[in-house]
Amino acid sequence: MAADAPELSAQERAGKAFPVSWDQFHRDCRALTWRLNEVGPFHAVIAITRGGLVPAAIVARELGVRVIDTVCIASYDHNKQGELQVLKGISEQAIKLGGGTGKGLLIVDDLVDTGKTGRMVREMLPDAHFATVYAKPMGRPLVDTFITEVSQDTWIFFPWDTALSYHPPLRDGAA
Ligand SMILES: O=P(O)(O)OC[C@H]1O[C@H](OP(=O)(O)OP(=O)(O)O)[C@H](O)[C@@H]1O
Ligand SMILES: O=c1[nH]c(=O)c2nc[nH]c2[nH]1
Ligand SMILES: [Mg+2]
Image (spheres, rainbow, N blue to C red):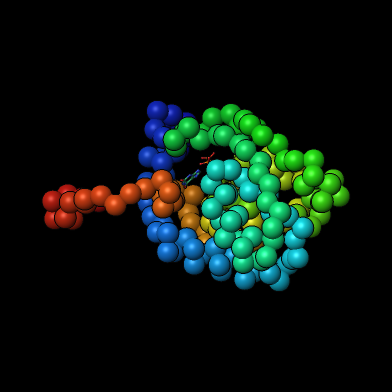
């Protein structure tokens, strides 16, 4: 599809929308933690910024983990994916806690879509546990634990990217 319409953004190509409220996101993060609690304990949480920061804070709080590190990766410029850029790597201290391979570390992101971002972090820490709140089919095989799968042609709208706004009635042509 991308080749058919390269001028369209990933969001426009997705077609379907899955808006997530703060309330729902918090509930989904707590559900994720219930699953992760069976797998841990973890020495540290590694958040893939920026989207992974919010679930990482909630998951770390629930699991009682106090050491949180970040790996800062930029790929989507608004909603078009470009080359991945590692703006900040994982700290030496966190790498040491995971014995160099990530054993006992928990990587957290908000979602996997194509899986490009997740794959890059997995390569840095092959033995870490990788958890996301949402997963699309292309990225799903990379994730160890997730809560909700949405179809590849769905765009997830996170509460930190959205705001309440007027929506015209369906009768007047609203989608
Ligand atoms: O599986 P992929 O196709 O790689 O996409 C998933 C990544 O895309 C989004 O991050 P984004 O690059 O938009 O940056 P952000 O977290 O700063 O919003 C999302 O938070 C994931 O990290
Ligand atoms: O807000 C977002 N929603 C998505 O569905 C998505 N996929 C990649 N990056 C994304 N960002
Ligand atoms: Mg991200």
